[in-house]
Length: 407
Image (cartoon, rainbow, N blue to C red; front, side, top):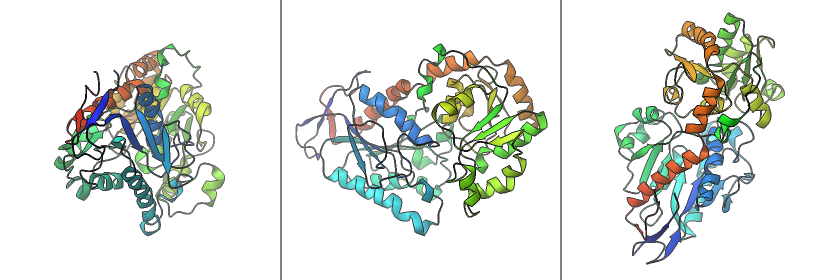
């Protein structure tokens, strides 16, 4: 596949007959740097996608925060660092963060004529602001990374005005979308991880006998369920990930209960963390995180929600660790129960405990083989290029000078 050129129709912002390379403005939002310092599902996805797009000839203008280190053709930001620590503060204290970020983005668009498409990843505000910019602005593809039942008044009344399209990160996610949102959908693209590249050729890790839950400590991830099962089975469980804005025990000790994740930790998880059978290691990064997951007998996903994308699922498979969890959300699309993991009826803790034992029969090499086949950044980029083509083909400002994507 290669990228061609586009010609803007008469009256379009980029001028009559001007040939332009495919320049995409990638909006990551103001919350974390790209790549993120630790937890950051959306930012990790963007960090995997952008290099593959650029490798295929796409120019990428990255709109994020100042300390993002991901290579791009241009960087745009208003905040010097990520604003994630403010995300769960009262609305009247944080509402200006998303607004300031998007104001800078819109100013950037108005000041240039080369951007052909905006690929947006900013929840709710990106969808509404970019969708309302009007016909003189580039078309928008907005990727939905979250639970689509969160904002019924927004998603139930969205109007793409012929220039806004959305995509999901799983088929299951889009089935929860209201009719108005489905009407502007161009499909779904499963999330990827760089760990999947040649994962099938990676030497097998030595298993250390522990179980792991990787990700933010929050009620819908079900760390309390995982801890109960570990005690019940007499297995060692490692919980890895931040608690709200807290990445280590010192930060957590100083936090107050106004943060819902901190409250969940203290009420439901901490009483089960004994430092021996169940322990919390805070945020782990890079090689330390990968080693922890690769050495685990299984990664647990006792989720209490319809998981939309499942980056941690694809990472676990790429590292050769079977996935054990409740079969809801995207998990049945990513995990073949009995081959790359074991999925059970949602909410059934007895069945989940049995699945932990059954996972011992899963071949780690089969997990790596599946990840290398399905979840590489290159595969994700190819799918997004097809979606870009669909979005551009529907935009009245742009006509193909030659096929935009030679598929």
